[in-house]
Image 1 (tube, one colour):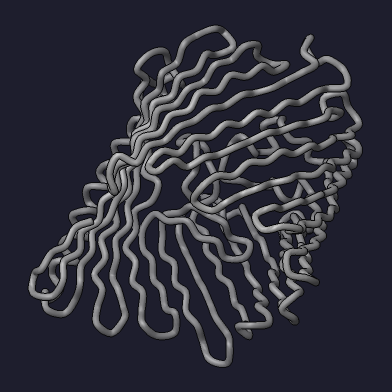
Image 2: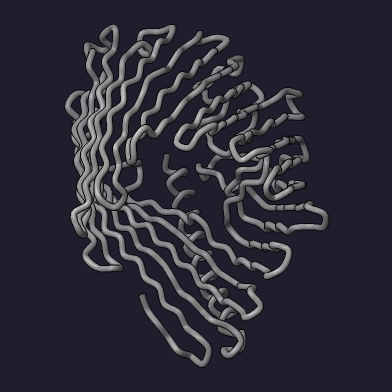
Length: 442
């Protein structure tokens, strides 16, 4: 445990050095441009969150979190822009220990970004998150995207994955890209690939995929993706959704998805999802199909119903179905209720679920309440009715400053009489520097 703490502490210090270096580098780059050639903007947000909860061992925990983000942008007259984005978080335990360390923190992202006024060109360098076909990665590296001729587009990236555990040994440098073709109003089809090698040169990840969006008519929309694992020679995942809106206020959709655990979780970026962790049976496969309908019979009133079937090779089948009614007046209030039923192969997947929720806006004050009840067919750990009640309130002190708090009381098969609370303070700011050094703040 001590070694891991040292590694984590070293990682945090390294990330803080990266933050400072990034801020200094970005500031020097942005300020080195001619003042008369651009408009500068500085924006950011600080979110301070204090939580309170009681563990199963009846220990009181009061962790304090701080999330900070900062954006600096140099906008040019031709429509191009050079920006620097950075965000980090930190935690300090005021009472009790959330983890083995009383303090923790990490760099969420920090990257320099150039956006051209032509061809939708974008270049990012640094710690960032990308979503390009089979790649959905938080990584340190470079990313390039641009439109090409004839409706074609391309994206490429290279870097090192950011792992959630500092001692988790994953692959080395990974790289890949996506090639797409689009006709703006009708379709987009993309082909993507990702590859990563181990430190010894062995194969760590090799994934390929196809993604589609088809919109032949205004009332029809089809979107989905399929990914393949070349190392395990199996399909990782397929997921497709078809939505049809035959009438104003009426929407009908259907979906189908399949996952092969052995192929999907072959090599991952977090130890919790590793097949070697013993949490996931590598032989399991899942196929889900479902449909839903949503209708607006009256202004502000929405009625919906849905059904979903989960079919597992090992765990068996489960059916989840129900309905929901919501009445909402924008910028004023909303309320609703839902009822759902889960019919599964095991006791913990056989229950009825009820929910009531409401939200009211009174000037600068926002109030909300939420009640969820899960009634099991058979008691689990002596509990047949699991429920939670949450009340929250928020107040906009100024255009820049907002405070919010919520309190949740719950009872479940795994913890009786649990009380959770949260206090949140959000401060946002923005400043713009125009030509000639003029400045405006918001």
